Amino acid sequence: METLTIIWIIVLSYLLLNLGVGIYSHFRVKGSDDYLLAGRRIGVFMTAGTLAATEIGGGSTVGVAAKAYGDWGLSAGWYVVSAGIGVILVAFIAPLLRRAMATTVPEIIGRRFGKASHLITSILSMLATITLAGVQITATATIVSVLSGMSTELSILICGGILVVYTMFGGMWSVTLTDIIHFVVLIGGFTIAVPFVIQNAGGWDYIVANVPAEQWGFTKVGWPTIIGLIIMYFMTFSTGQESVQRYFAAKDERTAVLGSVLCGLFMAFFAFVPAILGLIALAMFPNIEANNAVATVALHLMHPILAGLVMASVVSATMSSGAGDLLGAATVFTKDIIQAQWDPNISDEKLTRYSRYCVAVWGIIAIGISLMSKAIIPMLVFAFTMRSAGPFAAFLLGLLWKGATKGAGIWSIILGSIAGFVWEIMGQPFGIMSIIFGSSISLIVFIIVVYIERSQGKPPAPPAIPEL
Image (cartoon, rainbow, N blue to C red; front, side):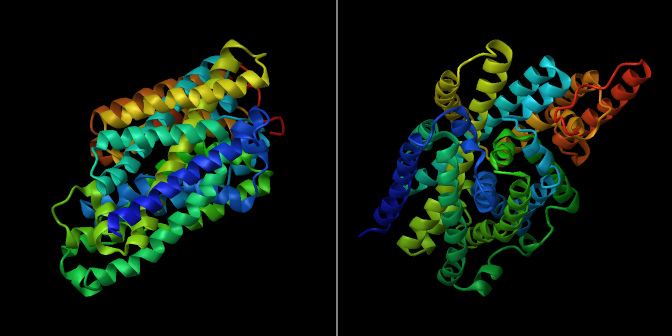
């Protein structure tokens, strides 16, 4: 049997498994709490696995290998290590997230700072998560395109369609169950593959000799970028709907904390594996498209069965992240716009039905985004900036600062978002990332407005969590 045939059988079987889990999960959904939060019943290892599977996506696999193939070299692995550290830092506020008994990030901001802050944050969150879903579809389609020879555009349509269907059917139950499968296949497939690839490439010494020496720099990307990535990930994971939704779904506060720490450790363990594969691709295939590094290595340097598992693991990473993004966008729209802004008395049955419709609609838009822009890591960073630069201070300080005032929320969200967007358009002067610049402005504005309003005698905003 030909190599491509074996690989295709494995990858298609994996995609069909995802659809099967989605259909199975459909029958477990009894209401919107089940559909959006898996009934708030997931345990420590499921929390860690679903967080890791959500955060290790196209950027952490295909994107890291592409960066290692290109400018960053081995140091591209810091992209994932930084994410792992960011997840561990979120563990410090995880008890507050779980205690809030909320469904979305904008809901918490709305409780504290009012309807205007709620609406603006909802729109930013929704646009960002739809964009992120488009990035994951691009990463999945890249693999399918290389394996099949079909155009990237057709691959995007096929992969996007499968993603939409299984997410729409089962909601958080299907996303969580497939996330665990994805996580096991991803970590196992990539880790097992590396020694076989090194051997088939002619050995480690041959690879080192055929990769420019500077590409092996462990911190080539630079400490400012590494520190910036850690800050960026803490900000975006603590305010990102697709990640915070996992903390809301944990069965208790302890589960949320332990799941977050375990997830960070899993990510650190995995971090440099895709980077090494990218460098092997550079040594053996120096004239390919960077985004095709993983697929090319799998196709030419692995046994067909192992190549199929690795390709399935990449598909697993991108599909799980994309599913979390789509469900997050649907959750924000139904809970924070339909229910919070238009129809507070909407029935649970309608809410669940509208959530499924939203997954379909946002999925179609994500496919369109994927067709228009095939960049991976740049699009990820832009989406992170969109959703976190403005709301970060309002969300974090809204949870922690009892004296925060209502005006501080809305002004920090607006001015921080504008600052982040303008900084991105300006090309990130001085090497300062847009999300960090925008969040810094958001933080400064928040503090200034609080002190101005308190000096005017205005009372603190009502707490988002009654226990605070």
